[in-house]
Length: 221
Image (cartoon, rainbow, N blue to C red; front, side):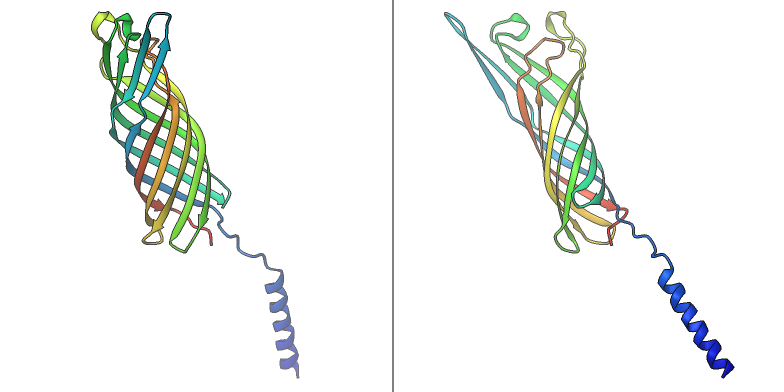
């Protein structure tokens, strides 16, 4: 009888302890690191200025190039997260027109090292256990660092910073719990650099189709 009573009390106490014991916290944060490559494709802009007796045409373009992109993302909820981007490419800005160093029909090409730093609001949705769709929207800056420091007519283009707007849409596909592949389209809108007033600064759009290798640190359970 005593043994039965003791066993009953012990089981009741264990059940009570199990009921009031706190539930282990669940990690709701997903963190990914990625490194990839993209094609830098920038829209050529043409400015036409009409004068009383003539018309001036100025053209600005950026040669297509291959870019490198690093990315850090954290998602706390499907609609709440952030993405930090770090990019690099080397390209030549070509300027053709009568306003370039005040020489009619003058062509000027300025090679640049171009660096991107940007921060974006990140949204994502787990479509399947392996496939995740996402979209980003944010802002940042482009740094145009001229490769050469002296040109004809004794002028030197200066380092130029340009604010940018960023929009991204894409998907991640996981091969393992930690490794995956990312395909995305990135659109950057900004003004061409003027290198200290040497050339114009038309608004343009850079398209960057990007492929990246992704390492995932955490995943929502």
